[in-house]
Image (cartoon, rainbow, N blue to C red; front, side, top):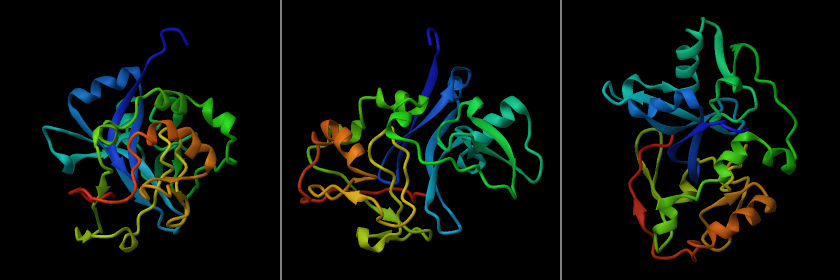
Length: 228
């Protein structure tokens, strides 16, 4: 992979963790004119949720934005005909390399592969790229754990986790496993903030997580926009 380059864009926090998007080298220049954020889309069939990269031209405003995979497809392959959609081949909805994107008819379902083994996941390009990052700067530098304030679809503040309908993604940065049911994943027993899809990812994340994991006390709230 000599000379092989990729772009990694920080999208911000969604579903309980900081999310990143993967781009081809030729698309890295988009960061000069576009703002990026993570957008959670709940499956209408009640089968969990997915996180996508959302992008908009900073001069034109957020109202002109679109999903990053749609933007990139139009940029390199032209418009998408009615009745078709852009999907991610490997199921990682923030891996927006062009070779990972394909067109599929709206009435067709995205092919669902069997759950990959931990070994196969660790060999994926997205896993390798995100694992090299140094962790979430926000979490790294706060002396006390940060508790996000969530909003519902009407913009109303939800004061406690028990009042929310939030799907969490496994907190280990390179893992993209997402809850299919609310509170499906196990929660860290100490800080009671982060969730993991299993002991494998929790053990892998501990060397970083232990730096800021504290018993749940002295709550620090921070206003956030709706995670949608």
